[in-house]
Length: 359
Ligand code: GDD
Image (cartoon, rainbow, N blue to C red; front, top):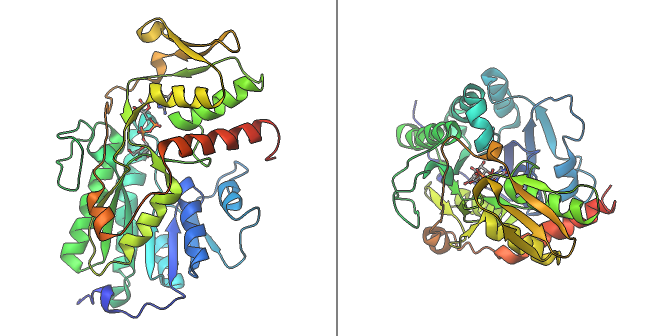
């Protein structure tokens, strides 16, 4: 079969986008972004018995998800259903954001992580490919975790990969699969190699949210302390709303390529704690060493952070720092948030939530 590169297709203002993982942090921000610029948006979500699955999506839309946003129940492991959805909805662009996204949990659950993060994208790619000359453009949520034990600093699109977790290894598979479908079938497929990106919508078991939500709860007297793992890990933290904009920009290029999306600035988990505590006037003081280290609040007169080895990972990614120059130049992408405004927004949100202001 001959595949017509999608760059030659007419792409009007009512472009149709299908987002897997639409209920997650990135899915919600991306849905809002695309909806605001006139896209017809649809999303795929997994059925769950846990209530509140649409909370993030509702939040970005100020409480109510627009009726025009179609939601399909499916799963990345359900190839026939994905194919049916793609054939029914006929998207121009498919953003594959669904994944088991927690690196630590991937050590405990490697097979389900690989199924969702490696075979899942293959199913989505196959569904796209089955559209023949109508194949949509495809975005794969690749990750800086693929750099793992970093081979150079900072990391750019040419840096060799060295993943350090089942999560990173599975993501590397889908990265190369996207490249392979691009080269084999002329499919417009691009990888966004996104460094850590956070927001008020971040899940509660990621370190940034654990810190901002935990400190807000401590301040409101709802808990005594939080427990963290490796305080020395360094990350290049940006804001999810900036990063979904980069995803969209990649998909509007003439040629499909892969891009590093990062701020180019790095902080440690320890520094994140310090900035967050500072914003809350907690007067944080570190005492002790290694697993006996604690963060003491002089304002409250109590220990508010403890180190617990249960959060150490069997193999750690000690440092990540991205070089976003290609994205800055080719995509004209520029993040609006700084590290400080990111932390501030998360703190403000969590304080309001703990005061009952968001219920
Ligand atoms: N989650 C967590 N919880 N991490 C902790 C904790 C803790 O209590 N204490 C220290 N850390 C350290 C982790 O060991 C890691 O080095 C760092 O904080 C960041 O952890 P996470 O916030 O869980 O994010 P991540 O870097 O492992 O992965 C995130 O970013 C990737 C992009 O680089 C996720 O969003 C991935 O899905 C994404 O691909």
